[in-house]
Length: 328
Picture (cartoon, rainbow, N blue to C red):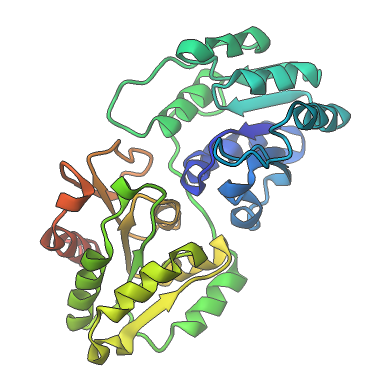
């Protein structure tokens, strides 16, 4: 069994190769995964063969107390659910005390986890396998570095693993047909962000799309239902005579979105889950990063760095996309 703490799709993508590495050393080559619903694991992982089942951990965010596992009774119900399945091992990608305590209460014999950082070091009282993960102070995304250290420390791999995602053929075939009328050089623009400091802005994305369309590339503006207004505003800023090779898409499924970007020559977007999905699908990817931790999990990602996301220029974005479409 593996417990995935973090909420985002990107966090799940970072750990894909390590989930598989644990599965390879588990009975039957499969794992049971515990993950929060907003990680969209049930959707994203439909095509993998190393997953037995998913237990949805409904704790929710601090601002949303409705998660059924947030209360004490909900937590205890999860303990009994896990205990009934008689797992031999739990690997915990997270540093919270409540996860190691859950594994202890469920009677799981082998309990592996980060060991906690700072005030959360109490987690290690209910873990029983060392080594623990040391705090990471480098420039890279910490979630990936911690997961890498945990996996190497416990012998699941010998070095960092690059996340890769195979989209099922049925999804690829559907979107290949849907997009076949577009020119072969297609650029996916991934919009939306969980935080304003990650958002490059409607005006910038519209200007980028316009420049790419003028250069006779196809542009696929991609987001979820939550990004409807953003996508509509971007489209409204693009001249009508340029929209022939423009598609604005809001697939309900993460795998559908993955299939869309897989039909593209390049992807550029905010620091959001779908950009990391695109990279995992081996689509040349440009990440509009600003001043944030670097995505060291995939050396093929080109990051646009500036004091802030707002200071990433249109010219920088166009130049970066041009380089990945036509490598020097």
